[in-house]
Image (tube, rainbow, N blue to C red; front, side, top):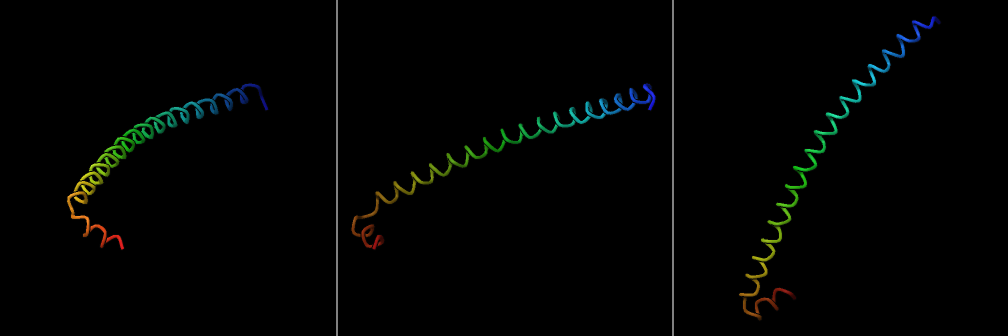
Amino acid sequence: MSSLKLQEQIAQRVERLLLRHEELQRTNQLLTEQVGQLTHERDQFKSRLESARNRIDALLERLPEDVVAKDAK
């Protein structure tokens, strides 16, 4: 194999690697953004769940003791 042909093959491989690297960087950026959005959404759901639990606890506190005890049995 001639030296020139080998250099061309190496150059082509390097070019493909550079393109693949750029593609993976873009994909990584998109995935990082998606993780951020999902983390924010999860935090909102956790906050809403905690609020709902607090409202339920407050409602249970307002019930007479005998009703709460009967339902626990």
